[in-house]
Length: 156
Image (tube, rainbow, N blue to C red):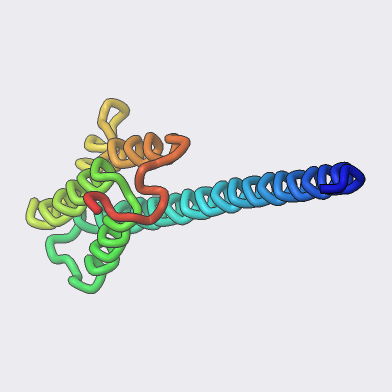
């Protein structure tokens, strides 16, 4: 082998290694940015889902306090939201959502509340029926990398 070619091969090898390193670095950076963007989007999706559930549950609970008959069509929405949570949420959040749905249905079978009874029930020492659910949601959303952030259902 001619020694004159050695510096040329070294330069080519150095260029190839530099190019591969640059490519690998760019790919890893892009991969990380894509992952952060995906996790952020999934977190936003769960936040919207939890907000919808809280809005729907609040309306239904208020309705259940003053009425004895539920409209099945209005209950379908909260069941659909609970089912969506089964895809994206932790078991703790799902468990609390199901408890709220059961509480709403049970409230329809209780005697209706008058306005003074509602005032007493909503006193300063009473805990909101949605408080535990909200706290579980906040805990899940605060986790940096939720095990359910990838969209996989619990148990998969």
